[in-house]
Length: 110
Ligand code: FES
Image 1: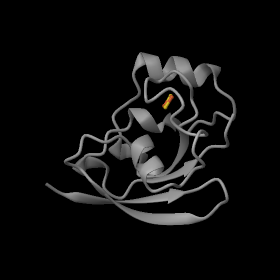
Image 2: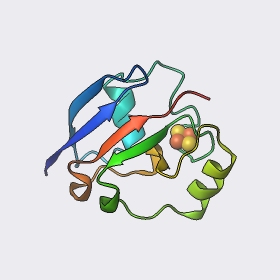
Image 3: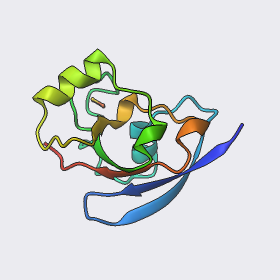
Image 4: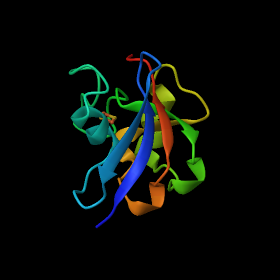
């Protein structure tokens, strides 16, 4: 069991230093929701199925810690708005010890 530190910048530009547990099978979208860093109904709309892009984040630090995106994530991001080179779907980022120190900014709501 290990907690990790994350820096998450919300849609207002405020950065939050978050401590997240790695032993609860959470993904980053669920962490953002549980800390209420985005308005209810504007993130995680598809429930984490890589089908809505409401959970899009920009990786602003520690991108090398992440596993590459799979075909579903790549396909969803190719159709989403506001996509940048550093975009990822936060529902596809598993909270694990490997991503300790990751920094992200939540993308605008589509
Ligand atoms: Fe829908 Fe991540 S919650 S794509």
